[in-house]
Amino acid sequence: MKKQATKLTKQEKERIENRLLAIFATALGAEMLCLYLINWFRGSAGFVTTARWLTYILLVGFIVLAVFLKLKSKKFVQQGQAARAQKYNNWFWVSVATAICAFFIYPTEIIGLIPGIGMPIVLAINKLNFFLGSPISFRILVVMILVGIYTIAAFIHYGIISAQAHKASLNKGNK
Image (cartoon, rainbow, N blue to C red; front, side, top):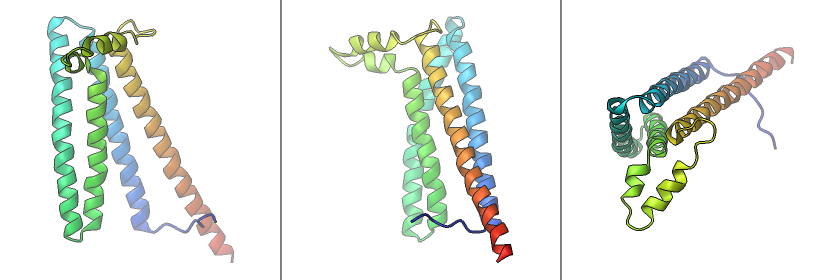
């Protein structure tokens, strides 16, 4: 059975608006960082080294942040603060996604350390360069496209919820 749309309260509308603002701001920051990384990986040796270090710092930093956020979320669940726990859990998933993207952007040195199978995997990964000429630029572009798709899908999802709630509030007035 389909769930009936109900009129949104002021708090629910504000929660949706805040979530959309957080999604947009996070996506905008991610896209800007990806553009910087593309330019730095295409630059001179100093810029490439800086981009590598930044990617590894993001990887390790967001893994540590994800662990911290998950522990904090569990602490709030035990204290009975479900709303705060949910916020920390949401940011936990953002941190996990960011760590995965950082690994996806520049995994070659980490995978290359695996004895025996590391270098063949690195060579296979580096063949994925399609039209950009650089496999790293291609992987960054894939991350940028995925961030864009998620952002658009979230805006459509919350737009549908808001439209259904608005339609339900108009129908309730006619009864």
